[in-house]
Image (cartoon, rainbow, N blue to C red; front, side, top):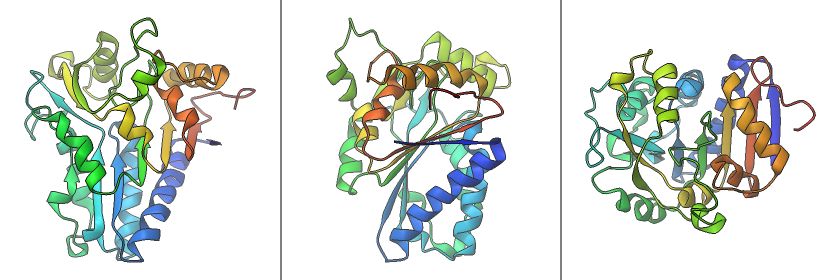
Length: 262
């Protein structure tokens, strides 16, 4: 595990984008495909702008880039929200990243993948058939979730079974709905869907490299617990990343204090 404290959001975005750019270009420059796992939310906005700028400047062959998002909202648990929904992750990715790519570089719509609430079981085989995720970008929920893999009591599921969870549809906890209302919905809880298709713990942990970024004060508590206890537990899903063979954690020191523990 690599850990790095940076000054602020701007530094986090610059360093995170540099890590993604280096990994992507290492394969694309050799004419090889790259599978990039993507996350959404305010944490990633600045990073995506920098990543697109760097790939455009390098004249990267983006026809070789495939993206795999962690999740997509569903209003009813059986269909994705419309692309024009204000919180649609399809919409977010197109606005924050895909539309910023130079069209001449060849990124194709069919290479942007999202878990489908109507058929979540198809996502993991598709990832495997593509060769697996080369790098998975992650945020951390205020309750320690990654993607929408919500905490579960160890009395209800074993450590091993939680780590093997596949991509699936699940209801969002009231805590996550409240967090998303505050962070991404402008305080309007009525527009926050109550279900999501989420990449499971298994495909996340099978990614060749994982990168977790944190820049909110509310993320300090789950990060401190994760680094203090040093054990995987379903009660803190992000804790499973500690056992990943290539895991990097970056946080902003102006919002998060992990002194003495990381």
